[in-house]
Image (cartoon, rainbow, N blue to C red; front, side):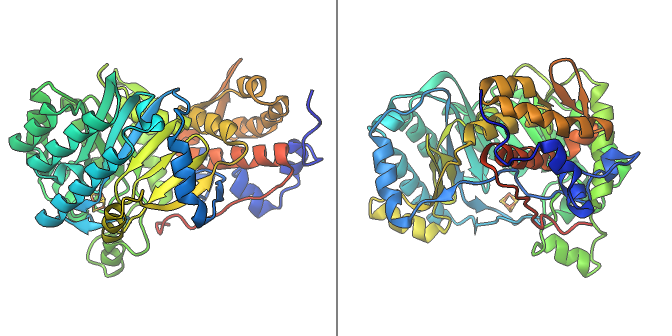
Length: 473
Ligand code: SF4
């Protein structure tokens, strides 16, 4: 049996003694409207309690050492980054480069070289990949010739499982036969499209090109090939996206031949073109966090009445074709090999980020060097953190299971769940606690609080993180 809680104080006592402001941030406030009012805002962008930066001088040797052994094979994926976009979306907070034909071809040359560089090393060759994710940026922006070269290289240099999920992210504007047929010919089996809204005015204010009619027509054309799972992302809280427009957006999900969708909350970045346009009065304000909560609640109510499967707190599957495997694996903390400028990944014992600047990335590839920009060793409690993050993303928390698997002191988390149950954020069942609609909307805050409590209970240090996540009220 382990010693008592490492902080020397029970979680229940610590939570009861929090100053009112801190208490509202960590456990939320008591209210009759938990969906809208439990918290003021998302308190972190992505929940987590980080790792520890490794000294720059060790990055290459750490990577090279990792490559020499097969590592764990319990589910593997690769993330491949395409840092180009045709146009900049007005809400974007992570734009890299506009498309340029010559630069694109030069970049794909280096990306293929990067895949090849470690292809014969045990870490890359011994365990098959269950999922490949081509993200961006806009991978669909690549020319048919370049995407074909890249997909062939993926098959040549990465071992893939027979049922490997190969996702390509993109824009509806790129759904033209020459491109789609290139994707199908070389093994893409899932296409994930950032639609954001079907409403033409909302789309235009967000910097998207095509009208509602074109979007609907192109999605139908993609689905008609019957070659890939068709997934769309919608964002709620955009300027001009009234409750009626949001209802129409949801109705379009039902009407179209889709396999699944994500519903994301708008994060209005301080330096985004959208924020500048709002501040200058050129477009109406984005929804407040409270209004976003109402939109999420409306979506949950609507989708609960449809024969669809909620796969996570923000993802739904409409047909059996959608597996959402890559996202599941990354939430679970599986090994993810990164390739490309700005790609992030995970080794058995470290997090890794690659050079974001395309010129720097290409220069370092030309020197035959994995273009590592940052490496962090994993937190000692990473396995527990991953299990918690994965469970909450799936909409539940199994404290007894976590305590049995990792540490009996975790049962103290029941003190937190009891408060959240009273406040309408979770509903406790005999064996697990399920997130209510309010709990699902606030899942990032709930996750962060659970992780911080775990660190305190098992390592003895209480610390609470607060970031300025987005500019909406
Ligand atoms: S497609 Fe993505 S990366 Fe490109 S501008 Fe739009 S939001 Fe930014």
